[in-house]
Image (cartoon, rainbow, N blue to C red):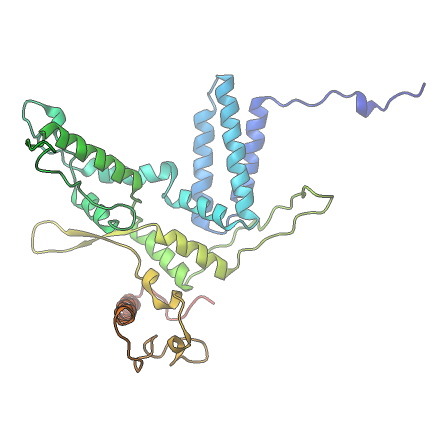
Length: 341
């Protein structure tokens, strides 16, 4: 009787959970090094390292199995982002810049800690104290009214449906519930440096630092062929980063005659530029051979009425505001004279 090959008789290799975790950590680092944005590469790698050290001392077997499952899910997201999945790439960038995850809580915590506590509505009941606020937190909430939230403060009725005065305890509860929902929905502000960097990237006046590792060759599920590499060109990078920039405001302190500055929250003016909006053939009159506008982006000779006229005024106002902001930034030296490429 012929003997079986020794390969068949070998027992299967079973890795321990610690060995699986180390393997997943290396693969996560490898996938993170392929992201096209240098900020995302640094932030995601930092978060992976922190999370691995937090879970390193876990002893519960069921908990360790769940953590390994979460790591495989994160690895799958990074792999799909690097192979051309646009929305997985957006998901990773939002985590890196702080719209999701722990980074979001780290950016919002200083603003929440600045809020000054207000006196209770009933002096004998400390729990009736409404949530406090601060100038920066108030400016951040006002900037996102109509985008992520509806109101900064809830509308409190004066009387109940039966005609009695509205209870004070219910007023405090309504305000705390509303504040909790607002903090759950608003996006944290970006720093001025990060905000200006994203603006330059979106407008094409700056390029991301390319990763040293461009692509990881992977086996496909069908046959022995290798998966073809995917490269995010500059146009696709700008579109992805533009969507990321749309999610974040920034805070600016304007000096006033009073003691303290006045904080204002706003979104980037590059998002309202008519260069990024669709239009008809008349919108492209008066441009040079490169497509750069020589004057207004709309046809001034065309007479419009009603809703179309109001839309035309909004377009001209946005174009004027963007051009003024653009020239001001150029005069300050924050925007180069020529695009990157």
